[in-house]
Image (cartoon, rainbow, N blue to C red; front, side):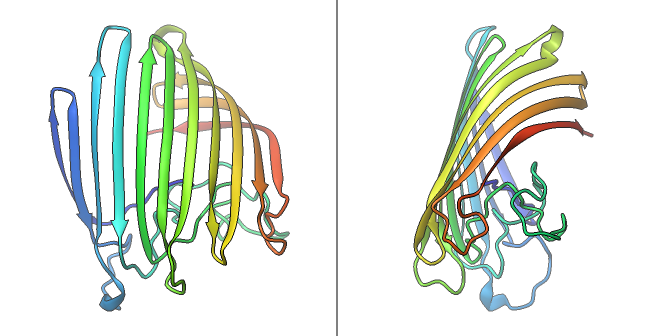
Length: 240
């Protein structure tokens, strides 16, 4: 599950002695339309954390974030296309297009009307070695559902950066997500990744990755039932 949205709103930040805090409110939509106000509510979100360069070699950081909205026509926290997808047209029906199936490879829990998400991210860096974790829970429902459903996501990542200026890295990540599908069926997804990358310039990254992803306990009529994919991907990215 990739949580990412670009709703219109305002954020207030506070930083002091390694502590950080943020509080925010948006209109709850990525578009500025104002029709059907009875179906809308603002989104409230925030973050608190602590980040410290303990020594020249050791950095410690932990943050906690939350996002909530209790009424939306189509919330896009987990369903929007702004985050894209790294595995285009994986496990899709024949003839699928990248425009209609832009979430291939990632999972949308379908919490379109109400959603509350909480994320905790611990991070440790010692020299070139980095340890990062994602602990996440999202609860909510679609407009046609009477009770909330909950999804839990856990990920752990180990990365080692080397060469002058840490221009290259190797690493691995394990990610699992479990929860209740619409219709009261429990399912899960597991992903393992091994990767290496090289920053050709500070703005250009070339990377290679091996990925293995498995879908578990999806309903028989779901295309992902018994599904899995694995393989090698080479990709370049440019940041502006």
